[in-house]
Figure 1 (cartoon, rainbow, N blue to C red):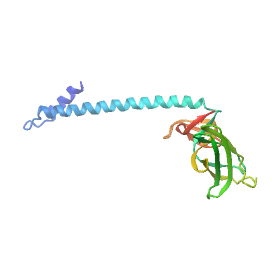
Figure 2: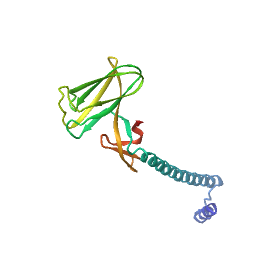
Figure 3: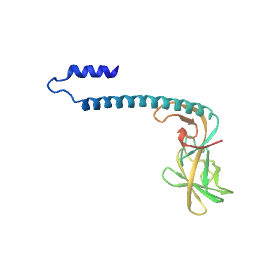
Figure 4: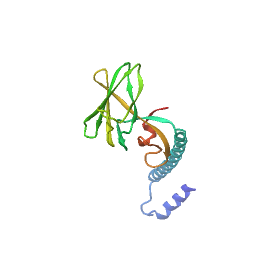
Length: 190
């Protein structure tokens, strides 16, 4: 039906002294077919994206009340002396040193632990400086190293309070400790 409509329109608007060649006409038909196919493909991708978003929302809802570990090394403390749970990612056994620095880069406290094996090693910072005094609210960065120098990854812990749907970033997990984090940032859950 589309073909016949196009062909009749072509004949009605064609200059009788310069008729269109059959090859040109077929090339135009192929272009229309390609555009139509691309539109159909785009519609199917939109449907697939909506389906994936719905599935991700259901998965995220099952995380409410669970603790997650996310990639990151900076945390914002809302209250003086607030504690922070975190983990360091080790490649094997050995001593782990974690430096806590304030937003000006000054060392606030050094934490240490002995890792027995490779994997996520959990620890907590009590929100105090080296003198045992509560630190002020603000931004703090964690830098971890193992066995005297090799930098290792830091993961921050938070309990999922709610789930946010939609938006350009997709499904977001809301935590009191970390704020909103993307589902893709989650590295472990407990």
